[in-house]
Image (cartoon, helix red, strand yellow):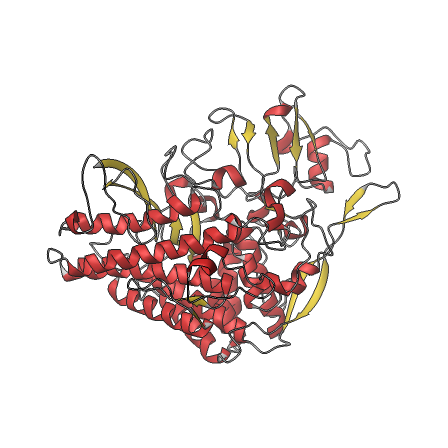
Length: 588
């Protein structure tokens, strides 16, 4: 057997654990053990020991990296179809333009990867449950980890595809089940996990693994997803968006100001019969249980510490995926995609990558001094092709940063010598294409920034998410003061103006508070693959995407129709699963 050092994608973020795994760890979708020419190992020969249990658990978690993240499909298919995200058309491709069958590998990877994870966790749980060498606590915790993984996989699937099969190990030809039935399965798995898993304060808890608070936090998000989708048609949500450019008198492209759109919620298929009020109460109860310490101790990190590699296992990160720096098998493309890797370690020049960012309309949502744009957005950078010309890019093109970068105002008049962060003698300029976007700094801190497979971790669920879910639920339950209090926890961390019933950021109605919380989620979880799913659950996806009026900042087409509400089921699944005969509407 060969040693690999891999990372469990677990609560608390990235934890490096050395385990014994086979050279070909990720093989069939339902069994991670296969025959090895040099050492015959099968399911039954794994043994009965705490070490064998760890291998089953780690082998299941490895599915997130190998098969899902390592090929670069994740997080693209979760991220690229949203209003505030953008990048070059060659990267976003037909998928980013709304033709989800034009690049079938992307939506197919979500289906195949999640069902591979589900089947592997079922297999692992059956073996762990039969082990006699474990204490009850050890066995329960490992089973809880497997159930959390299945719940999370089903949650990704049901939001993306609607009615989906619920898998079992006996027969893989399962029919699609109604959305409500899938959520019953998710809830049962997670409620069981809250009882089985360690708390992060238990002595046997290992940092980096999912724990009871992870399951409770995901339950809160699951209930909030159902509740929002079940809200009545016509429920008002206000967004700020619009066409990105206008052409001035000289023919130059200029950014258009944000416009306000009052949207009416559309019915979300599969959720119509659900009771929104009851679901909001469940969301509030589960979120509160995490925040008040029922399942352990969880804290928001200070902003300056939030995205440091050293804090990847901090309690804010309830569930995240990561890997080991430079590992050729268990790799993740997040750093390359969002930041770019450098020509040499700690170099000033990007060799490749740094393609995906947010639009100017997203950037303009923020208060002037909000850390999420002053520190969380890259304001200057240089590609290796700019070394010889002593040039670089700056962002955004507004009066303040243009003067800092060039010494001239937007009218081209000389104001003063460049100063502040740009006082380095480099000639910075701005471009109106995908080269200049609001690029995040969330994934900059890695062990080696000069390699393609750097060890950035991907945050699937954070405490900030649970807090904003709580705020959202409290508002819908007519507790406005409490909702604003929770909203301000996230805003205070980022140095944003505090919301109130009056003052400089007044939220005087339920509609305003609802819209402010949804917008806060867009700001807080940018480049974390959350925006599309918020638009979908609130029934405003089509109107929000079409409010852009066609192409976004980079020229990516954002026009959408009804078929874009769901991903197409892979053709291979329809062809091989005798219980599925048709696809989602518009994808026949």
